[in-house]
Image (cartoon, rainbow, N blue to C red; front, side):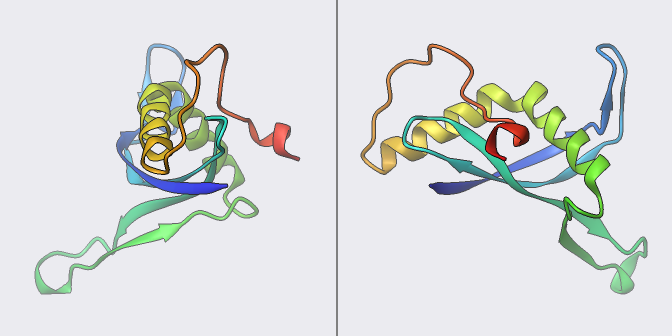
Length: 117
């Protein structure tokens, strides 16, 4: 299994089909297989210390599935809903760069966390 980094911007942590909340920027590690299937391996959020000028600092902080499970699940679902096609394209480009071609998609390629357990 290989992986790629998928940056995201303004990803909501809540969506009811019409309204969104949250506006997260960060990066997801997408783990992919030769079949074209993929899953989210890690999520990091772009964070800042809330200060301005020379005291301002930014860094990317990885989410812990164990301790931030609700946020992890919400962002994972948002990535699936809002970015699935873009992630699938990125996976197919990565596979092509690896010299692997896959058949056109016949069904859903994304594996959910419970399918991996």
